[in-house]
Structure formats: structure tokens, C-alpha cells
Amino acid sequence: MLLVLTHPLALSTSYVASLYLFKPRQQPSSDAPVHLPRDNPAVIRARLTGLSLSTIASFGLLALRYHRSGLSILGWRGLFDLLGLQVDRQAIKASIVGVGLTASLFAGPLFVEFLDRKLPGQKWFSLKRCWGDVTSWIGLRNWVFAPLTEELIFRSFTFASEFIMTNGMVDWKWLVFFTPVYFGVAHAHHIWESYVQSGRTRDGLIRGSIQAAFQFSYTTLFGWYSSYLFFRTGSVYPSIFAHTFCNMMGFPTLGYDLDRYPEKKQSIICSYIAGIVAFTAGMVRFVHTREFVYWPALL
Figure 1 (cartoon, one colour):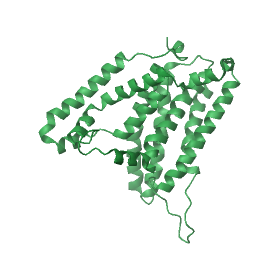
Figure 2: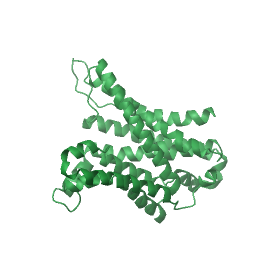
Figure 3: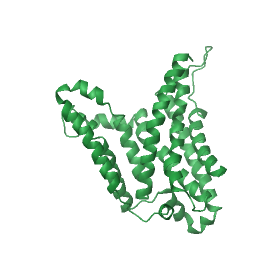
Figure 4: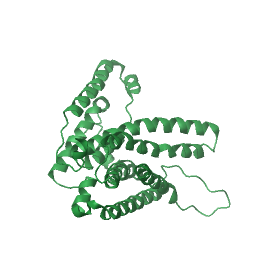
């Protein structure tokens, strides 16, 4: 039981630690080193390097553990099945369905985007601007590297390691409902960032703690949903694309939307409610798209 607890903790700890092991170079100065903000391009580049190396190292250790286990008779294909990394028509279908289900939850914010005339084909939509946003360092971090590495570490690698250590006798409730807590806790490092950025003041510590508590709540909720996608589809790609979509949309701001469009109050509220209803119905009706190695543990 101790290994079941500590191995996911080791994965998440090494992942978060990599954010701080690689630091951007600063110009020599007699003054004390300046703590650069997390959105500084140099900081982002350094952290993406750390995240990439941490993810690669975690995969190597997981592969080594797999090949030393009784499951190794399944070969590399068996490992990729455990990780949900198959690339085939079913994975593509699962990704489309998963993103569609995720988008339904954002019916309200998408309706507001429609009112803003910012959706594809509308007046203020710019493909060039979107491409610029995606390829910027902030965009690459938020919409490419973070979804990819986080879903691999906290879903794919964590679930596979638990399955390997228990020789397939994994408790699905543990995987679905508890392992996402590691994902939520991993965002607690923002407390330290807020504290340092504020000049190590008490207000900065309090502000960082509130921010981290909020992030812990919604990242854990998303972790449950992402775990659900992973199990129902047998592929990690729907989780990655859903993560990217959520990062692009951001957290819904109903109050702000109503302040901007008071004459559309009923329509906006109805769109938010319709999104929740559609998402809930989709979750209930969602069916798995492949025979998946974890499914026997769920029956």
C-alpha cells in the first residue's frame, strides 16, 4: 500500500521540482538576483526544458518497472496500451468526442464569445492572431506543454504505475477519485510564487494561499473528469485535448458576462444552464470506444 501511495507522489514531486531546478540565466550584477515572473519568456523556456526532461525520465523509469514486472510478456504494445498512447482511428474518434463533450460544458462562455463576434467566421476573429497566441511562449506553455506533460504524468504514467505495482489488481475508485488529488496538490507551488513576487509579505502569502486553494479545487475536479475520459476511451489523447480546450477557455466568468451584456441576461444564463445539462447528459451516455486493459478492473 505504501508504494501505491508514494510512487504517484514521486511522479508529481519530480514534475513540480523540475519547474525550479532549471532557472533562466541572469546578467551578472552586484545587486541581489531578481525573481522573474512566471510569464517571463526566459522563465518559461527554462521551465519547459525541466518539464520535458522530467516527463522523459518518468517514462524511462516507468518502462523499466514495466519490463521487470510480469506484464512484460505483453511487450511494448502492452505498455502503450497501459499508457493509452495508441494512435489509430479509435483514438481520433475518442478525441473528437471528448473535446465535443468538454465544449458542451462551455456553452455559456462560447455564447458570450459569439456575442463578442470572436468565433471563427465572425468579424473580430483573426486566424493570424490565434496562431500568434498559440506559438507565443505563454501559449506554448498553457496550450501545448502543460496539457501534454500534465496528462502524461498525472493520468497516463500514474495510472500505469499503479496498475503495474498491483499486478493488475488496481482499485478503480482509487485511480479515478484519489490520484487526481495529486494533480490538485501539484499546483500548491503557486503559493510560493505569489509570496516571492509580493516581496515575501504576509499579504502575498495569504493571496497565494487563496489562489492555490481555488486552483486545487478546480484542478482536482478537472482531474476527475480527465480520469473519466481516460477510462471511457482507453486513450490519453482526449484528456490532453480537453485540457488544452479548458486552458484556452479559462474559468467561466458568469458575473462579468452579465455585466457586459445586461440586455442578454436571460440568454446568457440559459446558455450556461444548457451547457451544464448537455455535459451531464453526455457524461451519462458516453460509451467506451475500445477494449481497454483497465476495464476488467472496473467490472
